Image 1 (cartoon, rainbow, N blue to C red):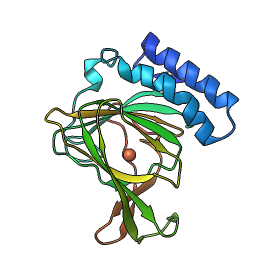
Image 2 (image 1 turned 90 degrees about the horizontal axis):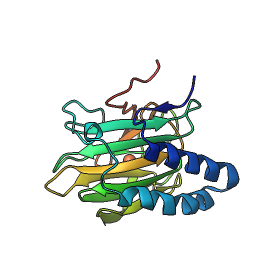
Image 3 (image 1 turned 180 degrees about the vertical axis):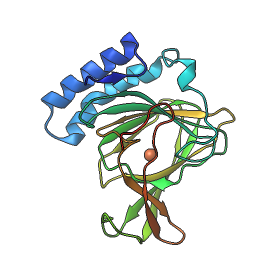
Image 4 (image 1 turned 90 degrees about the vertical axis):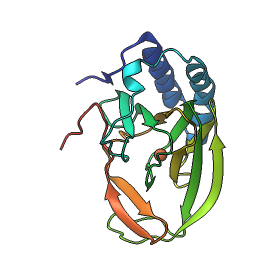
Length: 204
Ligand SMILES: [Fe+2]
């Protein structure tokens, strides 16, 4: 098995090569994210490289109606993935966690982001967790947010632009395939959640 480059372009290959070199040479997640940020910014600044096929919305998306989660790259160990989340106008993801470090940048459109915290970490079989809304952000093209679990790991995003928003997710796991959580802040309900990818299956 070798790494999967679903979007196999020189740009993606070079970016992943540089990210892997940074991962190998940094010892903490904040240090890693700080080193990745400048090269991620360069990728984000080029509006052309993402093929049209990964800019489409998807009627029956695992993140919700109309929401596509296109996998662009993943490694074989489940320790690195790059994906494009496409949300139509007005669409909102469920409140969810990621369970890995990550850097997410807004590539197209605008989003509102709601960030939540739990009083106690969510356990594997938990069905209830009190969530507190701790921050609201408005994201425009070029905005980044960092995931350093548990900080910033639970959120929901909503597209506020007329056009669909596209956010590029670089994560330290195979985020579409891992079992994570979705939350209902109004009731405190928590449920296991696997978002899947729009274009690639997860192994059973
Ligand atoms: Fe997310």
